[in-house]
Image 1 (cartoon, rainbow, N blue to C red):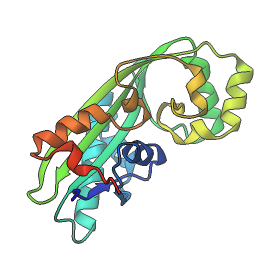
Image 2 (image 1 turned 120 degrees about the vertical axis):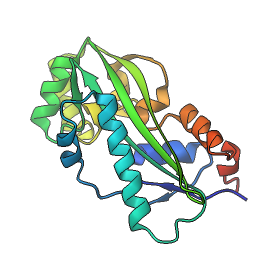
Image 3 (image 1 turned 90 degrees about the vertical axis):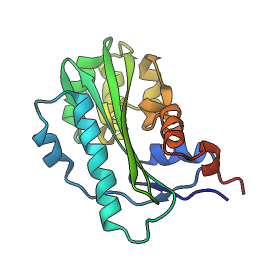
Length: 205
């Protein structure tokens, strides 16, 4: 029998990652005001911002959902640290184009904050995983064409490595899955520290 898993995120990439591990989570997105929390920590390191956002998302779902008394709850938030700035989703084409013109040929660090709660005893572990990302030296037309797909508008740092943006990432130094949205090796370690087996989360049917 597998332990139920709650994913406190509407991210298709995070859902895909868990499903790739034979984990079929119940998706309950948080409804926190991310901009409000980011404003509280605007002078903090990117690692601190994603940590606090992941904690807030987890606590929101825990407080606003009934019958969460077994299994685990997973919340996460990702941001790109580039030129000492914390970059979330660009949200509009102008921002995405400007970011890519600055990022091309350079390197950033993708930080993902993970908060995992064991629901039967409310034991909580929060961890930030960081992965260095080298961007290809793409030209202006490639940037315009990529932004026109709207993909980069809705993802942290304005890029993906599991879809169209993969061709524009030259190299990843560290955990690949962390850049997609969840560090699977880190999640396994956290689950074990919470006294559960990673494989107990698998649904083999």
